[in-house]
Structures are given as structure tokens and as C-alpha cells.
Length: 400
Ligand code: PLP
Image (cartoon, rainbow, N blue to C red):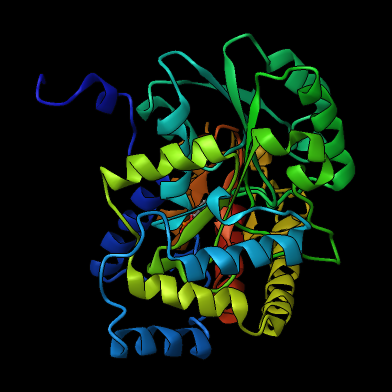
């Protein structure tokens, strides 16, 4: 219809949110559904953070703030980048928005002209291509196979760059695969980028604090300081501090881009919640030791799921370095037949079968740009995970 903009018609609804809604619907019908489709920690926000929010309310910190973040929060972010990443940003190089999602979207809207290209390694977080389309750009999807642990190689990057390339988006550890870039791998990408000065990098470090087996997180602006003026380092409190509902994300980057993002935000949403910003200061400045404890819990859950998934005939899985997702291959199930006689031909068929037969909600890899795979989140209780794995094993064994 003519009511919607052509720009909007190119944007698809988030498939992960769609799957959570389907799971909720089935649950409302009385089915027992274990939801492994959503991307949020099952932990509560730590108490010191909640206390800071309550204090903010009691102390009247309930008004408009500076559009792209309070000075207190920007200071805490500057300290965080230095302490944890070895990156020195000034206050005027920091932008705070309503979640990492808004920050990423602001950056794309502020920089893309029609038909500018954005290189997105696939599998990718579902929102990147649609955000790029919303901003008038063209997502250039680069398939990164399981053999390369779903990471873009220097050669694949070189081949994808054109004179129209504006950004490369990196996400490490990755949603949906959990694969992370080592400093050495980032250096190899940086060397290619140094040959192409017109390309900028948006690095989404949202899962920095969720990592396993002593894997060392690295971020590209720190690995190659010569890129500092071309990198937007995006992070947030949602995943690390179990603060998904508080909606605070942030970035450090070049002043011209940060300033344009603030202008855009000033004409759209203005500041993120003042109370949430006060809470985020407490998260970044407060004790960090619980991150290690929670990381250990996630690592146990990862090990449990990995072992159980690999034991299922027809499934296989790369070991993730971080985040809280597994991205198993279901290639071995393609071509098999369900008890009701339907043939499984795609990963969406696999996901629908697991939902209908096993009552386990996951998301097809095709939603993330690589098939045949599916994503499951292990950010839920061990009990839920064990039950989900049992049910998936039973359902898969029924395929012939
Ligand atoms: N980036 C990635 C890779 C994510 O998985 C998410 C959340 O699912 C976000 C960014 C956005 O997080 P938020 O907007 O809650 O900061």
C-alpha cells in the first residue's frame, strides 16, 4: 500500500522477536515450551545497580539530561574504555543512547548516503542489515563458513571492499555464533583496512564480558591505533550487567560522527532514561568481580549444551569463545522425514519441528544469513537446558 514508505518496506521485523512471540502464543495455548530463542541473561540486575537507580529517583535525577549522556556516565565510560580496553577517548568522543541498538542505528543514519555499502560478515546479528537498509545503504553480506569459525578473513574482506564501502561491521564475541576475533585476526583485518582509508569500522563489543576458556577479548581500535579515527567502538550494559530492560548503550569514536549522532538523537528520542543512566554509572564504576562468577556459570551451561548437542545424530557445533549462544549445524537433518511424513528441507523446517515436536524454541540460521544452522541461547537455567536437550534428542531420533 502507499501508506508505508518505500524505505520501511525494505525493513523486516526481527525474526528473533517473532520466534519469542510464537513461543509465547503456544505457551498461552497450554503447551510446555522451553524458550531458547531470546538473547538476554536470566540473571537479575545486581543490587548495587538497582540501589543507584532508586537513589537517582529519590534525589530528583528525573529530568532531561544532556542528549547523548550525562557527564557522570560519559566519565565512567571513558574510564571503562581505558581500564578494560586500553582505549583513550575524551568526553566529547562518547555517545550514550537507548541501548547499543540505538547507538548503532544512529551511527548508520548519521553516515550513510543512498547506496553506500556496509560489509557485514554472515552469520550476523539480525538487526545490522535492516538498520543499513533503513538508512538507505546496501548491506554487503560476506558468508563466513563454519570452517573459518564464522569469522571474516583478511582475503574475504579485501574482496568485499569497493569504492562505495563506508563501514565494516564487526561483532566479537558474535551473536549468533559466539565466535570471537583474537588480536592477531583483528590485526590481519586492520592491515587490509590500512590499505583502504575510506572504510570505517563499527565494532559491536556487546558480549565482551561473556567469554570462556580464558579466551582473550580484543577490540580493533586498540589492536591498531592507526585506525582510531576510523573506528566506532560500541558497547553497552545490557548483556554484561544483566540490564537489558534499562536500555543503555554507548560508543566511543571520532568527534564528527559522535556529534552527528547527538544531533540525530536530539531530534528523535533525546536522552536515554536519566534513571537508567545513573544505574549504568554504578554498573561501570562498581564492583566487577561478579562478572567472573557469572561467566563461570555461563561456561558450565555452554559445556553442557555443547556436549549434548554434539551427541545428537545429525547435529554438530563449533565451540563458542563467548556470548551465550550455540550455533549448531543441522545439515545432517536435512532430507530426513518427520513422523507425520513431512520432509525436512531447510533449517526453518528443523526449527519448526523442534518447536512443534519438542516444544523447544530456537531461531533458524537463515535469519542470521547462514544456513543450515540454528541458534539456541543458553542464558537459562541448567534444568531448562537439560530438559531442552533431552527433548531435542528424542525429537531428532524420531526423524527417519
Ligand atoms: N548487538 C548485539 C550483537 C546484540 O545481540 C544486541 C542485543 O541483542 C545488541 C547489540 C543490542 O543490545 P542493547 O540494545 O540492549 O544494548
